Length: 235
Image (cartoon, rainbow, N blue to C red; front, side, top):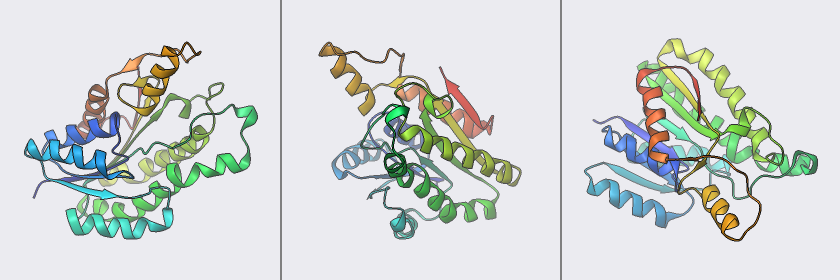
């Protein structure tokens, strides 16, 4: 049986690139996101290249539905050897000065609570077999607070703290926890598309480098396969 990964947040940009990279490495891939059409398109591409692919549509902001989602994944793919969790919130950044408690709280289910729930579902098998990986990729504002880039970032920082603690507990038991923090606009991502639209309209935009999603997926794979440092930054 091939090893198995679930990509939670398999949208355009890095999520799709991670799915492609792990399929290339021989993993069976389960794609999870809200919209079925992009998942089906990617699944056809990967299946055409010889990969085993499963598609599950789910709203990852609904933390209470996690046990049912985990059951669906096990029914299709069995136990996971790895999971990648990086869904993108529907709403974007705001200034820290205008952030309200209600707005900050709205990001927690998607970014933090559901990831914790999924780890509870899939970590026990990884520990039992003495091997596995839990992976994420987030923006650079997770690590360093930036002006006008609050909103999801505090929830991402909570996720980072949790994963750092989890790594300290499970690394010696064979489970790798890897975090990639990206200070660039990822080509093909929704954020990159918004920047390009604003630039074309003559609106002010954040100036930052552009990153190739395939390259970033390769960095995550190298981190995982080598069980290297728990965190890396790009660029």
